[in-house]
Length: 288
Image 1: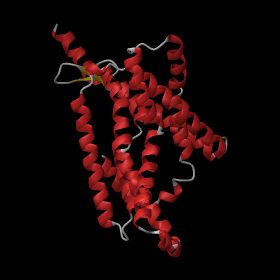
Image 2 (image 1 turned 90 degrees about the vertical axis):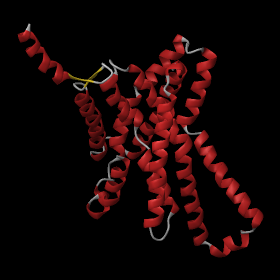
Image 3 (image 1 turned 180 degrees about the horizontal axis):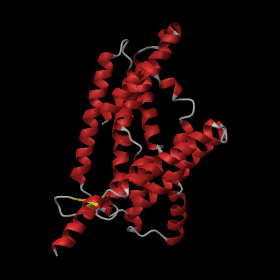
Image 4 (image 1 turned 180 degrees about the vertical axis):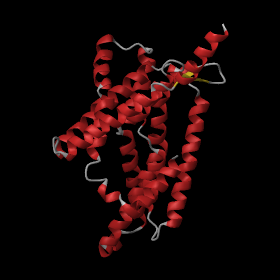
């Protein structure tokens, strides 16, 4: 009996890790999942670098991923999600932590960047709080918790809209403010003639409405809202025909998104070498 215990124990330690709650997290599937993701990204990069896929064709893949695959994936999972098992305190804690990082990065950028640039502040803050949850996060989370905590996978579809609905609009607003400032500098005389109290108010309202419109029409936000509505109307029971159609589109998302990510890297890596790597490295450190 002692011999059997000594043989099986190392095998158990190699394959999985026991948590305090008594559940097991298997790390054996983690490395294949990471290799799989980066292999598909590499294939996309090679296809773009070798000009196997042109820029216009790459844009078509991006449109297919963002306008068809991702909305279908979100809609189905929101429709069948059981909201009674969702840990809302966990989602609130994620929102708070992301908000703290967002605010700190925004303030540091506004203080450190000279001249002051609201666009950089908004862009850097979005970068530090936004992540590729669906294409990269889901396969890794699935590899770790598919067997022990399958409900964890549902949080991917709830965490992503948190950033898109609440934090990203602030970043977009900062970008629009900087865009407006840059436009005013280009044609000072024209802007001086048009600036008055009512024009300023209408310009501010138009700016806010533009950001709100962008948020509402975002596929992640729109399909999340529609999916939640469908969840209550259909009572988490999608018709079989619709479910199968959504499955086909949803299953195509991960591979196509990773491939497009590699494709979009073509021509962008060489320009980020040397001293220009300092800002990305600092942002990644803040994100971590």
